[in-house]
Length: 176
Image 1: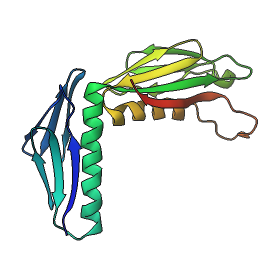
Image 2 (image 1 turned 90 degrees about the horizontal axis):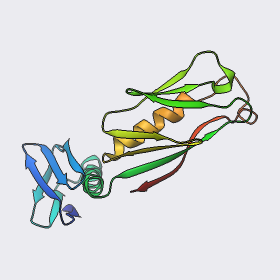
Image 3 (image 1 turned 180 degrees about the vertical axis):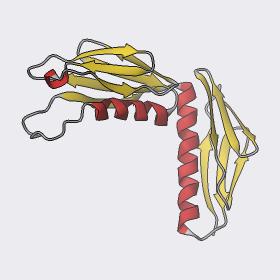
Image 4 (image 1 turned 135 degrees about the horizontal axis):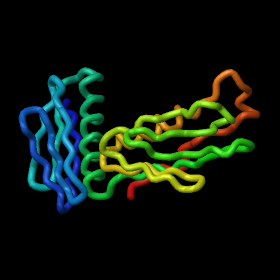
């Protein structure tokens, strides 16, 4: 039994393989990722990338779909990009947010004396509005991790979550 997944390459995107590293180049930038897994063969054609395996093992057949999804996300990222919209929610103490270098500082969260900070991963841009934050980039994993870092920085501990609902929350995920 052969398991095969095919990812079509959009126009304006070039996909190359250098050893085990898959390189995807498009109008918005370049991405690369190590795509090696034992028992999986990657074939790059003129219009598509094929991920195939002859193995019967569930772990290997599952990894075929995973690698194909990574390749598809890379192609989408270099053509369209990814956008996460986040909402700043507070009830009493107004939260102040600013980007300082590679971190996002959250000041006056629940009236706390010291600011909280969230790490902004390289390859993403964070824009701060009055009550919204947008995270954009071409790598889906990095954009999602940055948004998760921001959301996690405002996690409330030792208080009733039904009452204290302040924080910065992901509202929508989309392609640009």
